[in-house]
Image (cartoon, rainbow, N blue to C red; front, side, top):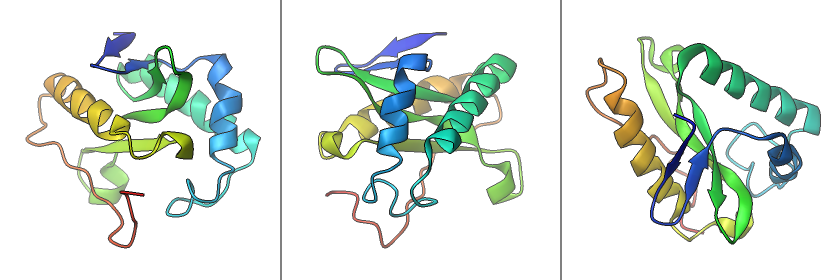
Length: 140
């Protein structure tokens, strides 16, 4: 599967054209507040390479989010390995959006679609959960 459409979004594999926008997003202190802190472009590029390699090796991973007619790249969502966090084979719902696209419901819309679609391809999934930092204000 190379792309999925929701009502407003296109969830797709990453493109080289996404790299600059992703690196800029990772320099925004508000976006990175509850993550690993601001990241230099080389770290952002390495992450995209890891995501794409994971797709090639496993057939699932984090999707780039595009809002057709509005923005070619606004962030990412999808499932990512969480075995190292939980101690058993598992996946977590991940997302990150550029601040200009917060508050529009894009992350929720995309994650719901990915959870439903990706869980169907993973036989041992019993539920799809997302865990947030209790101190984060996700409704900014």
